[in-house]
Image (tube, rainbow, N blue to C red; front, side, top):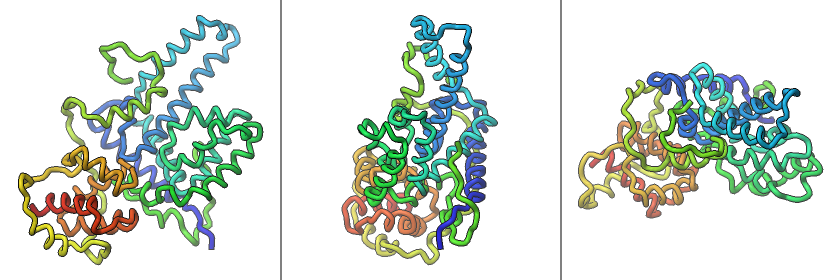
Length: 372
C-alpha cells in the first residue's frame, strides 16, 4: 500500500503553528523587521522560506517599475539610482501580524514538504525558473535552502544541464538516490518545529488516505551608522550569523505568556539506551568541584567548547537541533522525564554510543540541572 499525503493535516498544522508564533511575537511588538525574521523560530528553514518569499515580492516590485514603457530603465544613471533605491527598500522590511501570518503558514508547509519529499520539492522549485536559466535561479536561491540542499547544490555551474531543463529533473532524482543515506532524517528536521507545536509525521504520511499529494505553495529601526549598499537579501546570511553571536543586552520587553500545549509524559513506559536510575547512581559518586549550585537553562549554560562538541558529535552538526533539544529538556519536570525524552527523540535517532565521552558529558549536564 502506497503512502499518501494528508494535506488537510499539514494545512491545519501550519495554520496553528503560524498563529502561535505570531501571537507570541506581536503580543509585545507592532511589526516585524527583516532581522526579526532571521531568528523568528528555531527552524532556520522556516525563517529563510519567509525571506525567500519577500525576495520574490521584492523582485516583482522591481519588475513592475521596469514595465513602464515611457521611461528608459536601461540608462546607466537610472539603473544605478533604481538599484540603490531597491536595496534601501529591502532594508526597510516592516510586516504586521496580518501580513506575516500567511507568509509563515506557507513557509511551514514548504519546510515540511522539503523535509519529507526533497526530490519533488526541488523539482517544483526549478520549474519556476525561466527557460534556460535554471543555473542562475539555483545560484540566486541557494542561500535560502537549509535542508537537503545537497540534492541541488551540485548542479550549480555544471556544464551540460543548462540546455535541457528535463536533465535537471532527472539529475535531482538520481543524485538523491545516491546521497539519501547521508542526509539528515525527516524526524530530526521536523523536531526543530516541536518547540512551537509537535509535528505528527504519522498523521501526515498515512497508508489509507486517498487525499491527493499537495503541490508546493507557490521597517527596521534606522541605523545610526552608514548602511551597506547591498540589499538585505544579499546580506541575509550575514544577518543570520550575526544574530547568533553574543550581543549587548537588548531592551527589555514584556515576555508573552507561553502557549500551553499538551505535554507528553516521557517517564511512562519509555525505554531506550539510558536508564535514569543507573545514571543517577553513576553521577552521584562524582565530585562536583566548582560545579555545585543552581543551574539555569541548559541553552544558556553551555560553554563554547561544549556547544561546538555537542553540535558536531551528538547532533550531526545541526545547531538548530541542539538548541531544540536543550529547550525541550529545560521544559521537563524531572531527571527521569528528561532521560525519557532523550531516549525517545534523540539517542536512537542519532545513534549515540552510550559510553562515548560527549554523550556522558551531555547527560551529566542534564543530571546537574535536575539533581545537584
